[in-house]
Amino acid sequence: MKRHLPNFVLAAKGVKITRLESIMNKRFFLVTLLSAALVLVSAPGIIGAQSQPLAGKEVSFLTTFGGSELDAMNKSLDAFTKATGILVTVESNRQSMPILRTRLAGGNPPDLALIPQPGTLAAFVKAGQVKALVNKDGSAGLVDKKTLTDNYNQAIIDLGTVNGAVYAILAKANSKSTIWYKPASFKTLGVDIPKTWDDLIAIQNKYIAAGKTPWSIGAGDSWTLTDWFEEIYVRQNGADMYQKLFATHEIKWTDPSVAKALTAFKQIVSPADKNLTGGIDGTLATSFIDGVNLVFRPDAKAELYYEGGFMGSIIAQNFPKLTPVTDFNAFMFPAFDSKIGTPDEIGGDLLAAFADRPEVREFVKWMAGTDGNTLWAKTGAIVSPNKNVPLSTYSPLGAIDAGQVAGATVSVFDGSDQMPPDASQAMSTGLQDFIRNPDNMAKIQQTIEDAAAKAYGS
Image (cartoon, rainbow, N blue to C red; front, side, top):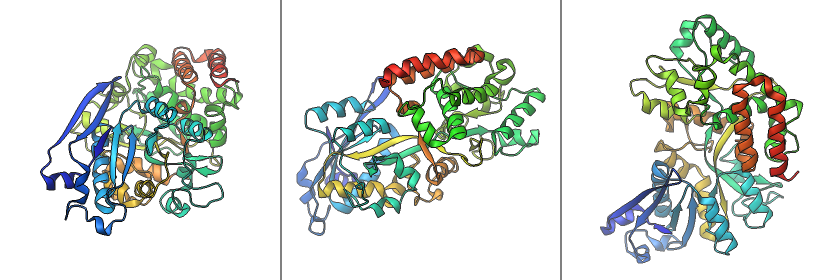
């Protein structure tokens, strides 16, 4: 575990800051190494402990962030320490959940941690291991309810709510409800942004009639297919049924609602030789990054690509000559039912507390508040769900993502991330089989249900 001392403290004392990076499980494992002693907090003119009653107190923070995300978060933590005098000990690991479970079992948890899945949060709550931010009766836990309602839409607060009490806040998020397109291509085709599924299918068919392939799907990374299904399912059935299918398995995968969603998805993937660049085999062999490249490279092979807001930075990096918004842009995945509208599917990390001390409460307030989130968002590394972070803080691409996340009236968390691993894997494999043979729908549903029933214990 490494101490995060603010850069302005270290610079003032002439301390060299070093950083260690390595690869772990194909993801970045990054820990900030800072060689400094706690005595720095009492150094005159550095923190000003006399005006800060909590100066020199420490909180420990286990995060999933690495790379630019962690560097950006550290800038916010610098400001937090400067404002409060509280030091933050940061441990960063993309595989943080096994570490957290081990430390909880050993009675030595961090004060706070980022949790990537609501289901994992619920399990910790059930075990009595998480401190409530706001109690079920609305009274303050670690923070006052107003701290949350002033900064987040209810849809975001609900993601960290378990049994009526708020146990976590969404620290950062990405919308997964974005479809990427080329404005010039839409202009040539003579179409506008689709508002409904029927509008989208009409655009698809118009592309085919014009001799173009409408879609690229990077189905070699099967999670792109689970995202497609989740978007369709929540728009057809609403957030409550979505949770019952993915989170609690109260709805079985053999349910007619699943068949209805797959039938809609079939409109996109079949016939594959007309609808999908590369046909069946090419689609299943294409990674999610190669998939979007096929749409935006000069010799484009397709016109549309569905995947989350994070794709904007990938497109910009891979095609630096393209101008965001002008040459590539995104629109919200369209609605099926006007009463359900367009719930925003979100992926992200929830901040939860495992200790209750004054300095922990101050840290939660900072992470929930506008100032810290704005500083963090200004780096361009993350999208904040805090509704008070101005969209002008972001790049044009970031503003698309942030507007969907913070502005949603209904939000749901990534469905496959809420499923037990074996059930999620069965869904991924089943949807790849669906690309191969969408007419085999009933058998695919049964296969997923068999795995889900076993995984959920039902």
